[in-house]
Length: 481
Image (cartoon, rainbow, N blue to C red; front, side):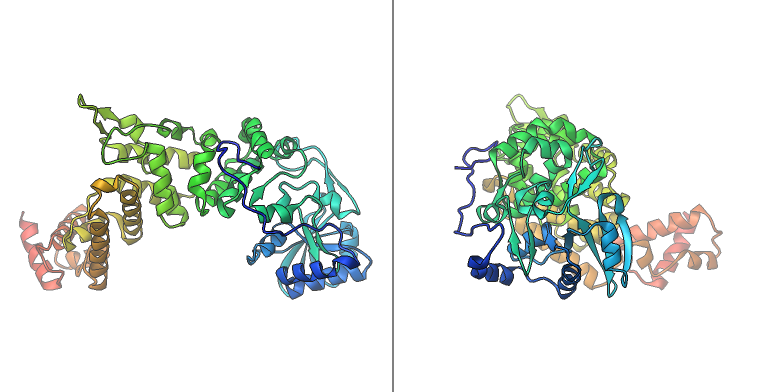
C-alpha cells in the first residue's frame, strides 16, 4: 500500500487497469490507437514533428502536455523534444523564423503561422550548482535519457503518433493511481532544483494526488535547500497550490513546508481558540475557510492570511474564554510584511490586506451601510470581503452561526440594489464637482476638498439627496460654518 508521508491513512487512488507502455511494437497497435484517441496532437505540432522525422530525426510532444492529455485536459502549451541538435534544427527549419530561446540548453523556439513552439534537443543534465538550472548539458540521441532527467513520473512521458506513448518510468500508471513519484532518486531530483518540493505539493493540490513515501521523505530531507530558490518562483508555486481543489488537504499534510518560507503561520498550528463559536484551532479553521471560498488567487490569499493575527492578540479571561481583539489590523500588518517579502504586486497585496483589515466589519441590513462599505472599500474589495465572511461563517461552530450566512447574502443583495440604483457612494458620483465649487466663489485649495467630503458623507448617510440644486444650497451653509 502506498501512503502519504504525514498521513499514514491516506492511500493512493485505485488503479483502473491502465498500464504504461514503453516502446510499442506491432503487438501494441490497439494500445497505441487507444492512446492516440486520448492525445490529440494539434495540426501544427504534428507538422513540426513530421518535418523533423522527414529529415531523419526523432521528435515527440513531451511533459505536461502529454500528462494533461491523458487526464482529459486541454494542454496550455505543447513542448517538443527531438534527437536533432540545435544546429540541425536550425537547418531543418531554415524556412521558418527561429528564435534561439535557450541555445545553451538546447532549446529553440520555432514560429509556425505566428504561433511559438519550444523544441529542445534530448539532453542529459550536468550539476545544478545554483539549485535551478544545470551548469552544462550533454546532448543525447535517446528519448529515454531525456525523460530520466525530469522531476516526476507523470511529467516524464513523451508521445508521437508513430511510436505512441514512451513511458519508461510508469507515469501513466501513476496518473491512474493518483500518485506523485520522483523519477529516479528523489533526493537527487530535489537537490538539483529544490523548487520541485513546492511543485510536488502544488501538483498534489491541483490533481488531488498523494505523494509516494520515498518522495515525501526526500522533500523534508531537502527542505533547507528551498532557501536557495528565488522568492518569485516560490510565490508562483504557492499561488497555484492555494487555488487547487485539494489545497486544504495539502496544506494540512505539508504545513511545515509552507512554514519554511512563511514562518509567521507556525503560531496558528494547534492553537485552541477557547471559544464556543469555533470548533477548530486557528490553523484548521483557516483550512476550512480556504475550502469554502472560490478558487480565485486574491480570495484564497485573503482566506489563508485572514486570521494570522490571532496568536499575537489572543487573551484569555478568568473563565478560560479566548478573545482576539484587533486581530484583523494585526493580521493585515503581518500579511503586508509577508507579501512584500514574497514580492507580490502592489495591487494584489493592497487588495488582500484591505480585505483582511475590514474583516472586523459586521454587515448591517441597510442600504446606508451598504453605501458606507462601498465608499470605504470599493465594489471589488467589498465583494471579496463578502466571500471571505461567508466562508468564515461556514467554518465556525454551526450551533452558533444560525442565520449569519443568510444575513451576509442579504447584505450582498443590498449592495446589488445600491449599484443597480446608481446610488452615490464615491466622490466621482456626486452631482457637484470641485469646478462647481470654484464657480460658486470658493478659491481652489483644501477648502474645496473639505466641503466635498462633507457633502459625500451626508449623501451616503441619506441626509442629502444627490441632486445638484440641493447640494449647491448646502454649500452656502457650509461656507458660513
